[in-house]
Amino acid sequence: MKTIYMDNAATTRVDDEVLKEMIPYFTEKYGNASSMHFFGQEAKSALEKSRKIIAKEIGAKSEEIIFTSGGTEANNLTLKGLFFWNKENETGKNHIITTRIEHDCILNTCKWLERQGAQITFIDVDAEGFVNLKELENAITDKTIVVSVIHGNNEIGTIQDLEAIGKICKKKGTLFHTDACQSFTKTTLDVKKQNLDLVTLNAHKIHGPKGVGALYIREGIKIVPLFHGGGHERKIRSGTENVSSVVGFGKAIEVANKKDIEKMIVMRNKIIDGILKIPNTRLNGAAPLTETKKGLFNKAPEEKRLCNNVNISFNNIEGESIGGYLETFGICTSTGSACASHSLESSHVLKSIGLTPVQANSTLRISISKYTTEEEVNFLLEKLPQVVDKLRKMSPIA
Amino acid sequence: MSTITYSKKVLKEFTNPKNMGEIKSPDGVGKVGNPACGYIMQIHIKVDKNKSGKEILKDIKFKTFGCAAAIATSSMITQLAKGKTLDEAEKITRNDVAESLEGLPPVKMHCSNLASDALKKAIEDYRKKKKLKKIIPAVTAASSVVVMGK
Ligand SMILES: Cc1ncc(COP(=O)(O)O)c(C=O)c1O
Ligand code: FES
Image 1 (cartoon, each protein chain N blue to C red):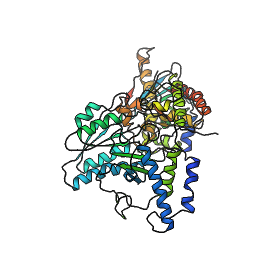
Image 2: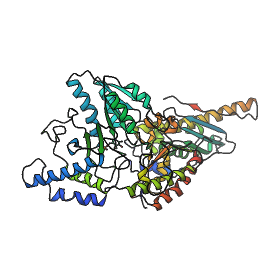
Image 3: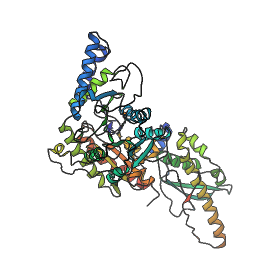
């Protein structure tokens, strides 16, 4: 059976060009970037080349980019690093503002920091998943260290208005961090325009390798490291750099392009329109840009939904079951259902946009990539109504 | 989000459930909801007497709104119970269901609760109706959703 991968929000296939670029750094150019000799300098210059690519992509300076082991580490470094710097320097600041729709690595870091004496405010979102800007502005006090807001949401695809939030943070004089793992290369990310002080990035959502990411830290911002050691990465992140992966990260950014984004937008819209034809379904997250003309990417500021995200609730049937039946046809998706995870708690993101636990458990996430084909989309749109029909016949709720 | 791994047997029952549906004018109906996840399972039974005059489950059908494990346990319990005497069927536990499915992940054990409870309710419902019928013939008691405790 052919398998169809539609879980690209979880991770993506490594691009062939990315892999090709990485391989020499395992077998030929395997030096430690801290070594003075030829091998070391070769690794160092590869590292710096990627750093430059990343910096340019978000409008930053190379020196402002720190490599990490991924998005989770960059988010941990941001919140813990800032909180403990303030604690160590007795600034009296201990307040962190974030939202109700963050990735677990922000949420759980905040919960842990609460036990270390931090004060956390979780800002509500509206029915489409947009942060309440008034509430956010009112939450900022003179004790606030940072406002951390996810850019493109991993579950419902909503893209926040970073520029508007950035303006508020600037006005109030607090730091602004965004977790841009899902949105990176897919929509506008500009540290100057959006007044960003810290940005979390990773490679495996953009056809790069897993286990590598970066944190942009604006020049002048003080932060305590998570790892102590040889003082790599401007003493902020010790540990021998993962050169091959960093090289892959840089290449992944280079191969990302507008045409692929436009292709995804068109396919995403086709999937959404197709699924919403099934009765008693609803789209979760921001309404997509519906035009399917060329030049869609240039409308990026207007697009409020990730180009690869579809999230739909189906009345009276359960997400894990839908996903399970789709898998019998080789189609791999993901669910907002708690029942597919180790905890029975249903998705906090879906709850915060107003879904009941049962509705949240009746949700399917389909996330495409540049490798998704028209054929695969047609196959999904052929099979999904059958699956829904079968499960609804099985459901005791009319 | 860490995901769950099911046994081959669970996946088989989930993708090919047996005895799915409803019975026209059932002798007993059991409907159970689970507060933990909001899922609902319904069991219909048809009762008959065997040669030695004991009441047996002649037919049994389920309908389930729930996760893959809930569907698999529904299918499994109908197969375990079919043909059994009412007394035997009532004794089927959630562990019997889980064992027949080659095990369930710990967080999914409550799904098999749904199955054993729905069956018990259906048998209870049948017995209640039988008692009532003795007093007033032709009573059809509608059964309501009973939310079970944790
Ligand atoms: C929004 C978001 N933040 C952070 C992460 C974690 O990144 P990583 O897997 O690189 O640790 C992910 C994906 O897993 C994500 O989607
Ligand atoms: S019935 Fe609750 S998770 Fe299966």
